[in-house]
Length: 137
Image 1: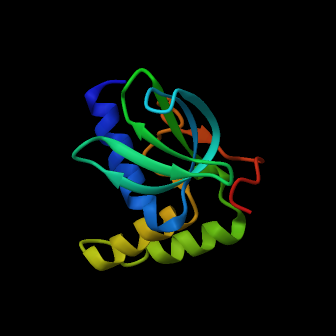
Image 2 (image 1 turned 60 degrees about the vertical axis):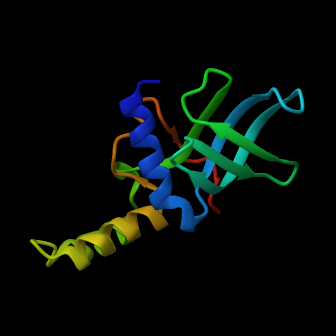
């Protein structure tokens, strides 16, 4: 993973943190010598250390983004995956965003709440397409 990809992934996950973003995590823990793999909810991020803490029903895991012993990919929905109702809501939010920071922030928050991939992380191999997986139901 390039430094640019690390920064992009951490920036994206930080914005999604309040909304219960789920991620696929593979981790070989050198500390407790255990292998972790599965769907986890991202709980906290320390961007200065590139570290993410995530929980599942079975365990808690700490991931160092970009380290070869770890893999983390959030489950996101492609923008093309919007329902007709979501498209109407999104278009309604987009009205008035020209040079209006509060409206732009509302749009970004809405996209994060609904787990849409507006940074093309899926296409870049940094996220997993959540379509049909019922991850957020």
